[in-house]
Image 1 (spheres, rainbow, N blue to C red):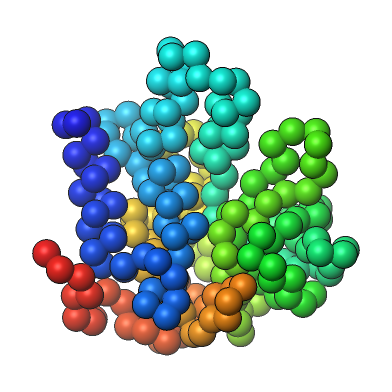
Image 2 (tube, rainbow, N blue to C red):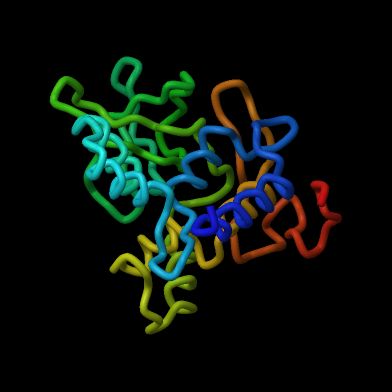
Length: 229
C-alpha cells in the first residue's frame, strides 16, 4: 500500500541494520522491536503509527471492544526508565523515572533483579480488573553503571535540543523523546551501542545515549554497515 511506504522503508532499513532477534546476534529483541515498529514509528503527514491505523479501522469493522482496548494500551505505551524498588513474590515493584509512585509488575522473562537497578522497559497496565499488576512487555534491558540522575540529566539535554518545536500527538517533550526518539532509530541505536552482555532473562546495557564515549560500541556512522542492501 502506497500509504505505508514510508513506514516500510523505516522498518526494513532498521531490520537490515540492527538484525533484531535477540542476543548474541543482536541486542534488539523481537519483543522490543515489534512494539517499536507497530506503535512508535511515525509515518505520513498525519504522523500515524500502525497502531493508530488499526484503532481507526477497528472501529469501522466492529473489532471486539476488548481487542481495541488492548491495542489502545499498546499504542499509548512507551519505553521508559524504571527504578527497581524491591520484589513481592514473583512480582517486581518498579518506579518510573522522576516519579514517587511504585507499581507491582510481572516480567514474563522471569527476571526479578535487585533493588536499585534501572530497567529500560515497556510497561503495560492491567487490561482489566482481573489483574492488579503491570506487565513488562519486553525482555528487560538492565542499565549497568547508570544512575537515575545521569539519565534524568540526559533527558533534560534532549528536551533542550527540541526547544520550542511543536511535537506530533500533543505529547510533552520528555514523553515524545521516550516514545518516538529525536530520530526514528534513536533507541534502536542506543540499545545496539550500549549492549554489554546478556543472560536468558535479561539484556544488559551501559552508557548514556548522547555521551558516545560511554557506549561500548561505536555509533552507526563510525562502524561498517551490518545488513545487506
